[in-house]
Image (tube, rainbow, N blue to C red; front, side, top):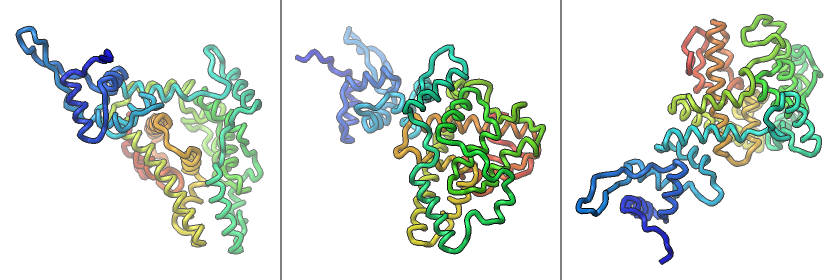
Length: 386
């Protein structure tokens, strides 16, 4: 005897069910999954009578769950990641477990230099700068794969005798040669935005210029940099010319969303985050294929336009990581929900927004555009709370 407790009859049914599909599951694993809130408890039934104890049976959903758990679990897999993957597949993971997994994903968003209670924003930013200066990792602004595609496109222009940037484009940039944010600067900018919920428009312009190192002219960055002059009383810009995302640390807002958003909205945001990544990787692969054949087409055009516009930031984000991570997808999903709520608030504060711009190629990834349900110009109902 090895002292191992024999599984209950109900658990044995789950073990046998898993074995039928080629998975070896033990009673100890079932207990562990239940301890982490991944597997539903057995349903207690009536007594057997005459002192023989009581009966129990697996919950109906446990049969599908145990197969998925056997497939997804493994050495080194965090229970929170498993919970997110199960949720993403539409399996009936207990809701408290799902919400806790989304919160854990936000908690894992850490700044270089560490996070200490009681630090103010300036102390945090000094720690970030010090960490990077001592060899810590700064943000990779343009991944190598994206840079190669950009260089091939510029090379194609040049080989065709078309100067880049074309002289006609320069007239639309009022700040040619303006500040270009460095990787170190991007790290500080991202940390500041995360901690304060604010992003100064001139800094966003510098970010856009830094994201396009192949171009000296950037009309879109110029448009962002001159927004305050063009729209001096915008309801979404603060007195310091900042675009305000939240009041204080954005992670607090994301945790609140994880705790309060309806499960179906969490699921829709999760699937949209995954679809955006697929869109980005597929667009990159199609552009690479066209350029390799010396026949730039629709994908190359869409890539190049997107790289000049906000969708380009989504492209670069997808290309920074080779493998999809459940925690990163969860944070992206919550960020999508935050953006959707912000768009809804903007629509309320400033009726008649030029929402048709959001439907232009390159402004938003198509899956995100569908998730936000942005109207095409006329007043309409946005997705998310009003």
